[in-house]
Length: 212
Image 1 (cartoon, rainbow, N blue to C red):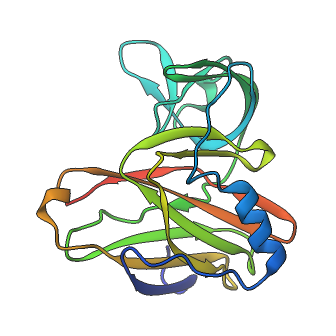
Image 2: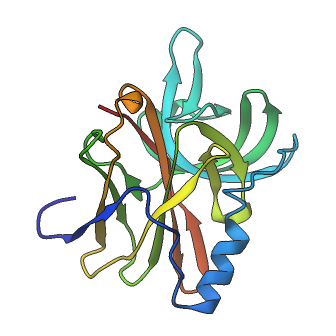
């Protein structure tokens, strides 16, 4: 986050899930977050997802960055870009999406810097001011389409670690203190945000970093 464009705060890691102030927003999040209780994925299921397109070296294929999800179709012109994709699940091992439509879209979520044991991990979101945002993390990727809101790319152990409201300026950054556990060094951490703006629920692009 650029200095002076948003707000930043620090929490303990992991924090206990917090009650959302709006019953409607709380109900919307509960409907979106089988994120913690991932169900099976059926082939031919329609999917919406956000993420960065990367190539798979030596294969000519494409993947959503920080996931195991393959993309097929007219993807090549969007290499290296964040995109909004709508398509169909045509394979589950690994998850494979046949792209029906794809457009470039702004990055909504990021992990600024690298998390460090005994220090902090930061979560950043850029979205409409006043939107509620919940940050989730996991130590493994996953794949669960959740309707028009998007796709959860976190494993079954995903948990919510921080909650906030996007301030004026559109950027929110929250620092969460990491445990001082040397066993975490070298592991990858995966994260996403769930945002609620009015009646709209959006699942962000994923991001991932190596723990140092």
